[in-house]
Length: 261
Ligand code: SF4
Ligand code: SF4
Image (cartoon, rainbow, N blue to C red; front, side, top):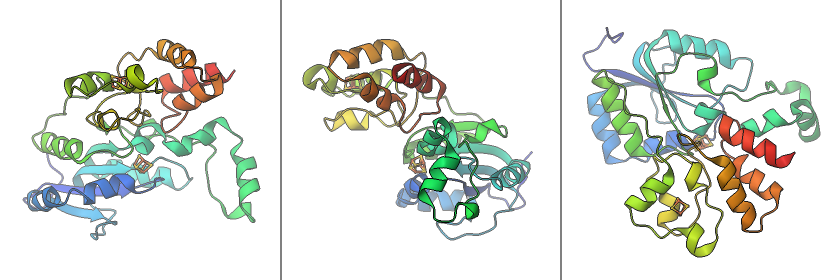
């Protein structure tokens, strides 16, 4: 049963540690966002205007990772106040770029960077939302795209979970008949191990995929690592392809660490 009080379904957009790029993807939807505002009641979306972070809603959309000691209590409250939680973007689904610190000595980094490290409230690890509360749906990407968000909201409002898109980017690339940049230009494309959802955006404009949508289903990371080494890249360079935006996603992390050691 809905927790809403008005007749329209309600939505809140919450931010944790992130660059705001996924919220911008929502705002940049333009006309579809105006249509969405007629279908749902947006209770909280600080970047767009409405403010009520304790609102009880049907769908809570969360951007960003858990990175500070205050995040956990706030996150639990959002879980209690929401029927569904949908996480958007690499930060919320895998810890994001900031999870690179999970492999480093965070305290040393903070001491090196800040004149007064004692004012920094930062956990040693950046972790995805699902590590702390139940998440009903995850949308990967850096950033997510508008079609994913719209179709996910629509499905949730009908009470069904959208089909997970975890095909490899290569599949989408072939469906679009894009020329393969790995075959034709020897570029270090991550498409063979990365999930689609982006519409194979980078290969469609002639550049290599850099893995921002995270691991696909059954990613053969060993085979891809060997192929990239065959292009003449050194192990450290190949490791960086895996340890980038989704460095804390298990399959990418394992391959990246194997190559570094
Ligand atoms: S996933 Fe990427 S675009 Fe989205 S908030 Fe994180 S860093 Fe920004
Ligand atoms: S360009 Fe990349 S994503 Fe497209 S088919 Fe080639 S390896 Fe796969």
